Length: 126
Length: 213
Image 1: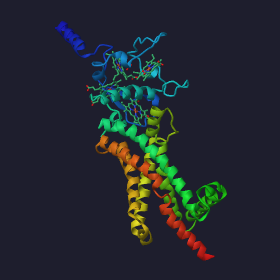
Image 2 (image 1 turned 180 degrees about the horizontal axis):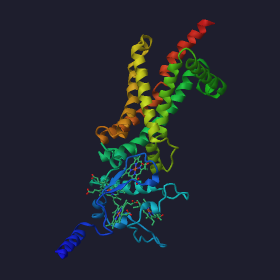
Image 3 (image 1 turned 90 degrees about the vertical axis):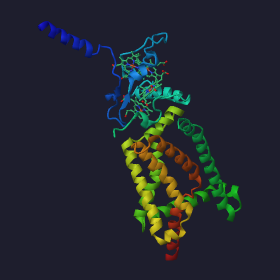
Image 4 (image 1 turned 135 degrees about the vertical axis):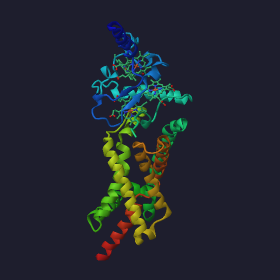
């Protein structure tokens, strides 16, 4: 009896508790590093991207020879400051450049993709 | 609609901006030319800087008189209208972000909440001025269709911008209307008879001053 209960609990965990490194289907991008947000948070369907697009296209960690060794699991803000003092890409520019540029190219080719206008990504809750 | 958007923020924006600058140059030349009729020609009066500045300062003084004189409220509303008309688009965060992305240069920007408020102020000032035009007979008599069109043409980009920011209505369509009408406005501004409204008041005021001497 006890054994089956234990087994049931074990089964439950295996079935429903996600493994440590799996990703949420949607990530809400609302970094507190920005302070008070001017625009509504961005709902980013990570899974819809990661199943079609190579992880390395977005996640990067360049070595001394500019090889991209991948930076999955790291947050963009680890390397892209909100107010960088060395004139490098700010966090906001990093997001906008990466997200918008790709969507623009896709849409320009007539393919479906995410937003390019402010309100298509920063969507207000109705 | 994506292609239209790309076109509007790309080539169409360049065209509108070029026409804006060209329009200003033409307008300025016209201004000097018209003033110089009673004098000895275009180049002469342009070279006669003292006289040109004198006439500009004369106008400014007259405007100041209106603001501090018999109609201060009128002056304040006119000031708010023009300050917001120029200030909001120039210092809006979203515009400056796009300029930074496209041309790697931008101006300092105001917080979105401030611009939101100033947009409402602009729309209200526009409405008050339009109402005055319709209600006050002395203004109505001298108002042309063009004057009414200018209320409409300056109003639409602000109303559409406000709706787009608050995501009221069909977002993409409204943002595209915002851009189209803003570009039309940019082309029109040099020919908008600056001081069309002020001018009438100022001349009225000047006549009043002259008759009191």
